[in-house]
Image (cartoon, rainbow over the protein chains, first blue to last red):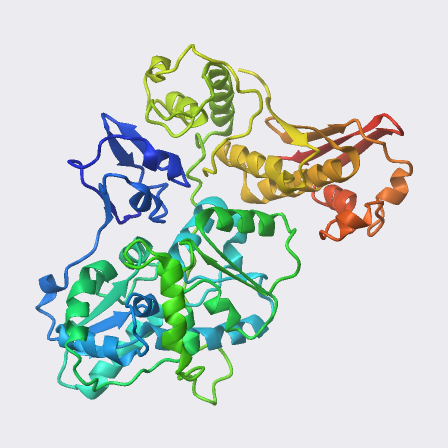
Length: 426
Length: 141
């Protein structure tokens, strides 16, 4: 069972219909006056967290303090963290700040991102791969493909995302530098910009289990970190990643680094759906690589970031300005993607929108849905708790709603003629 | 129960940017029916190409997708200019699309050939000056 990472504060939820109308997979319903998320359909994109006017939804994360049993705590900051601070022009101050708030070491995820960039270039040159290759870095995209674009599953780049490579490298480094440490002494703390990474780390990637131990929200760590950074301690650490690694924080950074003009970068869930539909229909010119980020602006737009994504992106430009292009390379004798960079298995297709396992039964149900839809007002008001009239009809046929009179507008209007859905659900 | 299900879509000829929407909608409905991904893709590509054709050449039209137990039929009907030479139109690379359309990346002359390639049967019923009806069949088993 897939475990998602969006949590509802029942006390705060007013049962308004904002989230159900914004959810791109129609995973939410209002039942008994509060939001209920269907875990099978949720892709952890964070839209509901973003739009909730009562702040009743939040991403489930761990608190650093609860993990004091680790003798050696390593912070793995996502590069998007570097865009959260005003007037910051160097990475050292942040890295030092992380040490000052109690981490024993810091390992920049941007380091691993530079290696993944190099692997991507190598992978794109390999024979027999399905193109365009779709980046596997945004877990929302990978999950969306497994739910909605099964045909594109083999286009996903089967290389582990930077956080996993960073986790492997950080653990190895800790053991080399401190041979006395046992595996259970080392805690790898990912500082995450989004809820989707939390889910990904919990659920893994196909049969692959994440090597990260704890996920801390960028928001949670922000003030503590800001306090430490303001003390102005002279940094004892140097940056370990260059412009390419940090560039991964915003949309277009990952793809522009592959040194190939045949790429496309899109961000925001609606745009991603448009691009994936276009690839599926084969009407995108021959592209090599597609970078897709569920959040507007890329990872800097994650729900656990503090700063507006566009301001964060601008700030990242100043942070990157004085850095070398890249500081991490694969060993010069390696001309292929290292075996341990591959993920063993991609997620399989889950036909969650299927009405029934039996085709004839699905046909009957669909026919009922079409009939019921004709009876409904077709204004998608959401007052019944379902995101659209079509979804309400489906809920009724599936038995999740008992009676058509649950439609508050029942009998007021008849408009639906075409079989188009007004919303972009799965 | 009814033996078939019909999904009806209006293809708006005025709006180039919305071309392709019916094929996206049809994918959703076929997923709900539990149709295998490869078949969904075939139907979707055939629909998409047909939709674009209707927008470019015929000022829009109607698209009906009819799902039977053993097959899916796609019927695209328009009241456009008709096709003068069907055999020629079926040739890859042949196109009568105006330059304005080609500059948008369409009009490569692959529409009809692709529709044929991705379906099991295709019949074109066309009368010059009256319109065209294309019927395609994708078998389910």
